[in-house]
Length: 96
Image 1 (cartoon, rainbow, N blue to C red):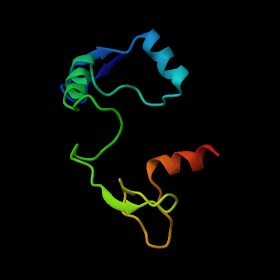
Image 2: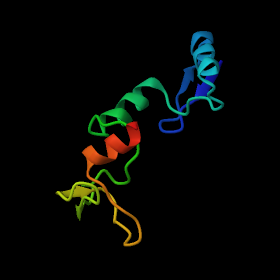
Image 3: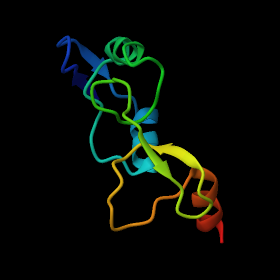
Image 4: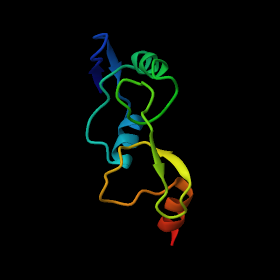
């Protein structure tokens, strides 16, 4: 099966093996970019995986842990009506 790259407009093959791989992972969409455009796009992302809008520095907010009382930072703005935990206390609570 031949597909057309959405970036450069070149036709590229979507092999039977790739189709089987996509099906086994439950992917419902075909790839939109040829291999070279995928590689170029991957090279722009600073090597990190996952989301993140704009690739900028993530904002941190200072807190005092509701469990142990230490000062820490969290990657979200705490609400005043809910307890906030340091990473160690949060992990302990999640694992128990």
